[in-house]
Length: 352
Image (cartoon, rainbow, N blue to C red):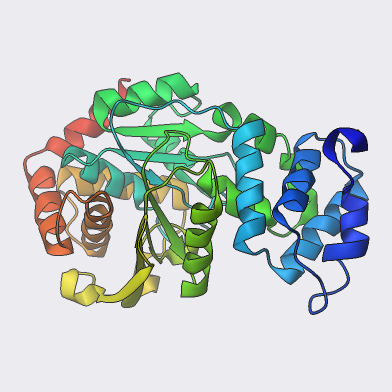
């Protein structure tokens, strides 16, 4: 097996490169990173060695060259893409989900789709380490089919402008690592690279970060990767690491292929989000988020959750270049809620 891959089994990488300690550890070159993830996706590494390797990489922090190597191997060895005719925005939120605040990406994505911006979301099912609520669980509560084959997900996008891709079906080898990841008890670099799986071969990626440095690392990873495929990336400070923008003074990072990364700050109270993050907390994230989605789309809800959905929908429209400003996007979002288009779209999805 070692001859098939090269000269760098995980144990040797631990001993000679990544596992000497948080301060003294070295970085892998692209070839070493690729070989490491090939071995991991072969699903046969010694569990102790694999755990040590993942933990060592968590301590030292992976650079974009390493992450790009992981991303490319994931695309070559695991991802089964299905590209719709539409050119959607890829929303790759952290798969291990949210535990406290409402998940508004479904409502925001539906509103954006109703306004003419195709949106793709993707997630797994209770992914480690948090195993909290993701896109799948809110869609399940709403009665939308989620355990779709990739071709059906692409058809959903083309028919309705919004589609969900299910990790076990489009990224099956990474999904097969579930038990090993769960036994780690902490996040690994797999949590980072799976958000760049891009199952719809979208040109635009929307994501989130806690610190701007992470957005810079993700953009560099996309630049370095041969298979990620994104030509534009928009990232913002999200609640619980998800792609729901946090209230207050929020940094947005924007990158287009061939250009430098730019960042700017938005004051969400200027766009109607004049409240605190705690005001978006709920008791049951999946069930309450679904109820909020229904109430916002029907026009019955006109509180802080509606305001947050409007801004998040506008960010999706802006990411794809369908509106020039967030104000324009908010106007479009209000229109499709008021005329019933967004609510009708959800009904169509439930019948898909």
